[in-house]
Amino acid sequence: MTEEQVQPAPEETGELEEGVAEDEKTAPEERTSELEESLAQLQQQMAEREQEMEGEVSTLKEQLASAAAKYRALILATAPEVPEELVRGETPEEVEASFAAAREMVEKVRRQLEAKAQAQRVPAGAPARTPLDLGALSPHEKIAYALSRQS
Image (tube, rainbow, N blue to C red; front, side, top):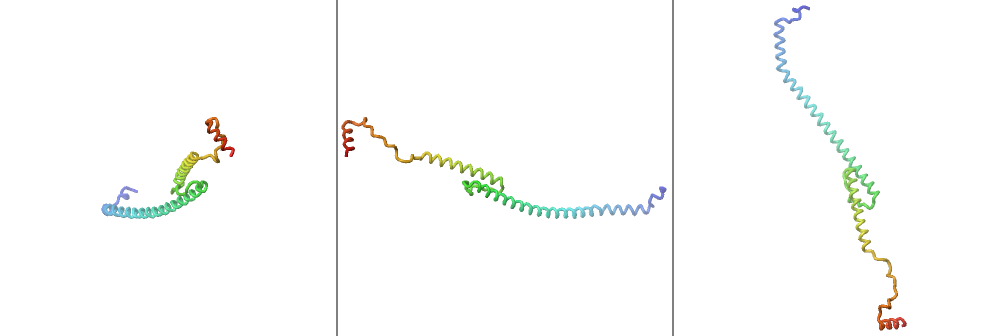
């Protein structure tokens, strides 16, 4: 090919330049509308995904609450001395911490009650009988004591 064959004719060049100028004017508007349309689609997809995630999150929260309730029931069954009202929590970790605090409180109360009971303890039965110490009595008291025993 020669250079003449590759070069467009002058009238063709004018038409091409006009076409390029029109494309340059319309191209940003078309590109903007394409981008806005793409953005709208992406926003819709994102909203749908957020709804899916919210559903999954609520399902997971329900499962976590169920697991925490089962764990609570299990640890309360192993420690009947701990009152149920003292053990709370939405997660197994919260239930565990609450149970540890409740068990500590129960032990503290138990120690206090045992100490109080120990302080108030009275020996069983009557005191041992000891004979009267006659050496501490006066002669008159000794005679009165001897006469009272003969009757």
